[in-house]
Amino acid sequence: MTDYAVVNPATGETLATYETFTDAQIEDAVSRAHAAAGVWGSTPASERAAVIRRIAEGHRARRDELAAVIVREMGKPLAGAVGEVDFAADIIEFYADNIEKITADQPLDILGDGTAVIRRAPIGALLGIMPWNFPAYQVARFAGPNLAIGNTILLKHAPQCPESSALLEEIYRDAGLPDGAYVNLYATNEQAATIIADPRVQGVSVTGSERAGAAVAEVAGRNLKKVALELGGSDPFILLSTDDLDATVQAAVDARLDNNGQSCNGAKRFIVADGLYDAFVEKFVASLAAVQATDPTQEDTILGPLSSLAAAERLQEQVDGAVAQGATLLTGGTREGAFFAPTVLADVTADMDVYREELFGPAAVVYRVADEDAAVKLANDTSFGLGSYVFTTDPAQAERVANGIDAGMVYVNVVLADSPELPFGGVKRSGTSREMGLLAADEFVNKKLIRVA
Image 1: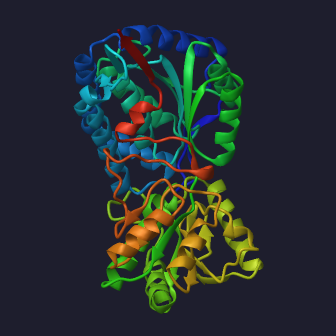
Image 2 (image 1 turned 45 degrees about the horizontal axis):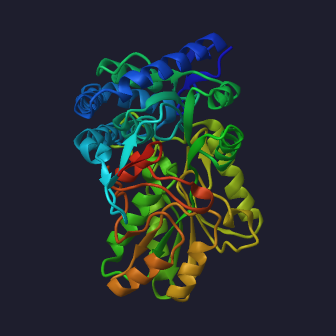
Image 3 (image 1 turned 180 degrees about the vertical axis):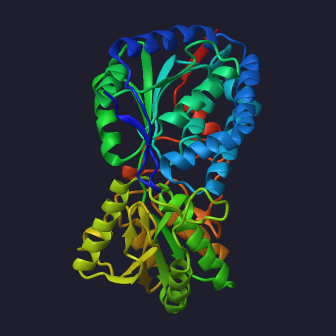
């Protein structure tokens, strides 16, 4: 039996299959991760940092190999896959560089005599459940800070990423981690639930859909386990003023097409002030329509296929449904296999399904608004709250809008600006935690109070 396979979305060809672990293999993996937690957690921070730094170096040394695998598994354009591996290495290296800050005691001012500190200690083995859209980057966001703290990692990747997950395990292991400190799992959902319930596993992090997050959180809650959730998004791109419309349009295109439109924090709803709407939409539609979905293995490819035929069919259903309910299709709306043409919808109203949905692919919705207040109101009228983008030439307005948006992240006059030191996460149905930056190292840690009289 196997649920794990490499299916090239550009061709539909099944390139490799991997057998799902037996229950005995799962038991062995959990036992090894639990045993390794005692070893790794007691390793001096400086020694952990040296190993973590070698993990980053391993990513760079095997960059082209890992990038090629990512292209085969989920159709990411080659340039994007190479950039992803580089970013994963940078994230991991960040935690090696900052391990002393992460693990340092935090002195407290106390009312009585004596001293008190918060000492951060590892909690043990953790399960990470990762998605297919960023096979290396997502793992780095989870594994980097937790290995720095001293936790150990059980990693269940998406079933369509078995080759990259195996290669990543090699990179982590070859860096010198103790046996069991990082273990790749080809596990079923049922086996994952068993792992979460196991008392030797102290927490679980999942990046994925709302449905996946709810299912994992339910199991974790029943077993009193800490859970970190990074889920979907329908991020607004708010344009209120600009002194360079062409540059702003290009930023909008970049924000929508990044990773073939399959980024949780990609801009998806474009909310434009009335005076700029017509000019923006004309240029935005023309720019998107000029992009052709092509072979992702070519270095100059901007847009490849969606991650699977099923993903493309789902997006087609959403777009067709929107048009059937009265939305206007300005460009695109067609596909060939898993390749989906860049698409723009207008005249979407709150009674349409697409108004509430996340479009996970190269499809955008444009909205005209009267003013700043209307833009913020529309931006917040969603169950999601991951990222957001605000373009304005007025600093005071930028501050007001940033304060008013219900989201975990606000980027002003910039897109694609994620960086290892910046925390990533959302509110509402987009999640409950933060990854990257120093905040990520506080998710799965024992903040132990030590009070001395």
